[in-house]
Length: 363
Image 1 (spheres, rainbow, N blue to C red):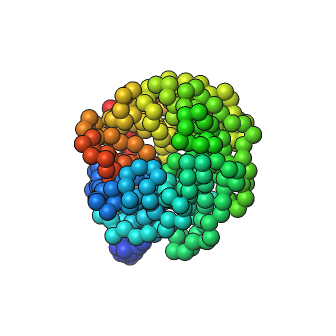
Image 2 (image 1 turned 60 degrees about the vertical axis):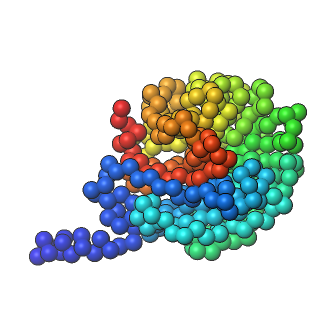
Image 3 (image 1 turned 60 degrees about the horizontal axis):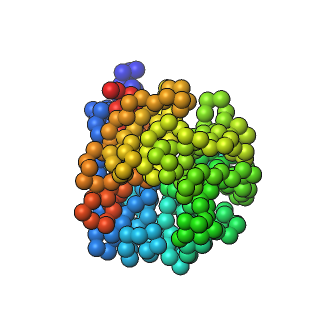
């Protein structure tokens, strides 16, 4: 009788939403590398970039990205498009519009976050000009079926950048949005500077950090955040200094140490940092090449970012560049998105790649 009951439970599990055998990693595929062109470029959509992925409650993957329709440059028309996958990213639904263009130029750079309350927050940028870029957030209380009205986060004037997949929630519940800002991004006379907007009421109201970070040359750019084991925060910073820079906060993101070199070679390109589930190593995804955004590699740190493993190659071709990586974890997998830009074109496609966590931990 017990055997029959167990077999019955196993059979039912095969058909439950979110079941491992149906969504994402299947037992026989635990070491499989899954990769697809999630959003291919075309004449009508010449740039598909800056994506993020959210795992819905039933295990479905929701991917969203910047969908440029009038050209590939940062000021071309764009909206936020999305697609869903019920098989771990092997196949995707037809794209649909998640956020229409409400800016004079575009909307772009999506971050998706499921908060500790269960609500989903959808962050995006609204671009009006080289002096006016705003960060907005919308809320869903029904697992992305419907969305509330946009709320303005960056209330000060200026050009405020938050990269895709950058919002972070701490164990305390505080939500942080790392911002790179300039009064006028079209001139090098206005260097970029980093600061944080944070919320202690689940994203309903926002405050700006006291400290503003500067770096040499073009300035501090496109920060990323990760929590450290001692309760402090690590900020990584894109620079023109030939490597990633960093800063530390011990008060939840309000005050920051003076930025300095991180010891990781990188061109003027954004890097992505996160913490692996399980053993808790830090994961860094970056371009280890001073001259180009290729290759795209991953490295691990077991000492909170003081030292890093030898880089492991995610994308190796010198005939394309790769950047603006998002990382989402689902069970024993890391789900990545990043743009792929072949050298002989000015078009960008968005690629999806699902890697078992063991891939990062093996030589």
